[in-house]
Image (tube, rainbow, N blue to C red; front, side, top):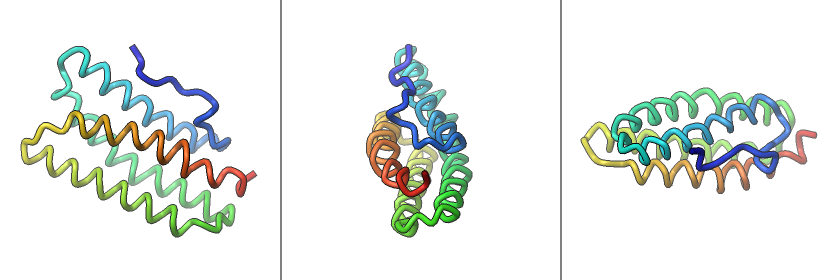
Length: 129
């Protein structure tokens, strides 16, 4: 059962970015389902690998769109992306060291939606219309 469902309140009105953001919601739901089924340890690595790909690809795509649109706060936004990338890699290192990071992954993903997608990403919408 899905924990989160995509709706238009998450949208930044750019299809590529919205589709990328939907992936974060899918990861939350995958992790949530794995926890409910008692197989979260199996899902952790899948989620971490997807997050590493996501931070490489999505952030670069989003930053390119923001640069092309003349977003005046691009440097600050890029800094936030870099901090998020750093968190993901540190979490991966902890996982590689054998630490149980299930709760931390869910917390990171949830904050990603509420703080980054719902707040910080919404700030650029007016600049790109």
